[in-house]
Length: 409
Ligand code: PLP
Image 1 (tube, helix red, strand yellow):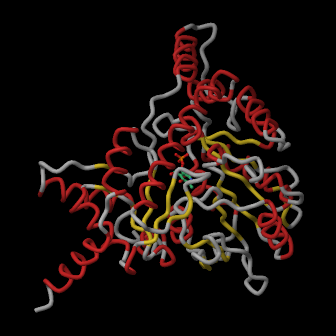
Image 2: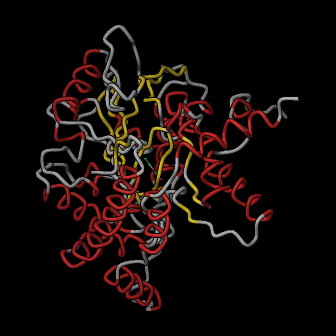
Image 3: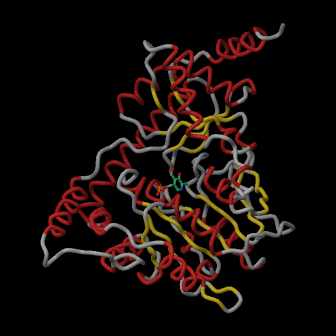
C-alpha cells in the first residue's frame, strides 16, 4: 500500500483533541481540582422542545407502513429546503430552495467540497483559522496562502490584489476570533474573487449569533456573490444540533466555471458519495426553523451570548484586552505580558482550573491569544467569570517566568 503523503503532514493531534488530552492529564494529577471548561466549542443547552417533538413524531411515522420513509431526496427533503429558503428571506436574503443541499454537518461539508476543485488549487485561508479549513486543505494537497488577521485589522484580513488564489475560505462570525465582516468588507472579497476567477467558501455556522441588522448574515447579501461563492451553514450552533447532525450547503445555479455548473457537479458528487440526511433529523431541523422553533432556539442563542457578555466584562475587569464576543459565542483575549498561548492556557488550567483554547492552535497569528467559548452553563461561566475578574495577571506572569527558570539547569 501507499499512504496519502498529505495526511502525514498534519499535526499529530487535532487541536481540540490535544486540549482534551492536556485537561485529562491535569485531572488525573489533580482529581480534587474543579475544572471549568471554556475551551471546547460544543453546545450545552438541551434540544428545543419543538425540535425533539418533531423528531419523535417523525420516528413514529417511520413505524407506520403507510408513512415509512426509505432513501430520501439526496439533496434534502423539499420541506426542509423550502424552510431554509424562507429562513434566509427572514433576513432579506433571496436564495432558491433548489440551491440548497442538506447534509450531516458543516465539518464534513467543508472537507467534501474539496472534491470540486483541482488538487493544485491555491487556497487562501485567514490566519488564525478554524482548523478544519487548514487540515482539509493540507489533506487535499493544496498550496496554502494566508491572509493575516491581526489586532490592527480587527482579525478581519482583507484581500491583497497581488495575491492570486483559486479558493478563499471566509468564516464570519469567526471561529476563533469572534470577528464579523461588514457588508463593505464582504463586497471587497466578492470583487476580489470575481477579478481572480476564484471561489469563496463562506462558513456562516455562527450567523444566528449576529445581534445587529447592520452586519451581514450571508455572503449572498452581496451582489455578485451568486457567481463566485458557496455558503455553508449548520444547525449545530443555531439550534443545538451538534449531536443530532444537520447542515446545508448553498451552491447557486448561477455559479459556473469553464462552462460547467458547480451546482450540477456538486449534485453529481453528492449522489455518488452521499445517500441523504436522516428523515427524522430533517423534520427536527425544519421544526427549528418554524416560528415556535425559532422562538425557542433564539432563547438558547441569547443565553450563550449573555455568557459571552459575562466573560468579556470579567476579563475587562481584570485589565486584559479582548475582541469578539459581541456577535459570536467566542471571546478572543490577548495574553498579557506577551505570554505564549499554550503557556497562558497551562497557567489558567493549573492555577484556576479554567480551560480555554490556545490561539496558537489556530495558526501563527493566534500566538499570544486565547479563545474563551461561551457554550457553558451559566453556573460554570459565572464561577469562571468570578475567578477571571479577580485574576492577578502580574502574579501569573511571575509564575510563568519562574516555571521557565525552573528548567534552566
Ligand atoms: N464551521 C465552524 C466555523 C465551526 O466552528 C464548526 C464547529 O465548531 C463547524 C463548521 C462544524 O459544524 P458541524 O457541527 O455542522 O459539523
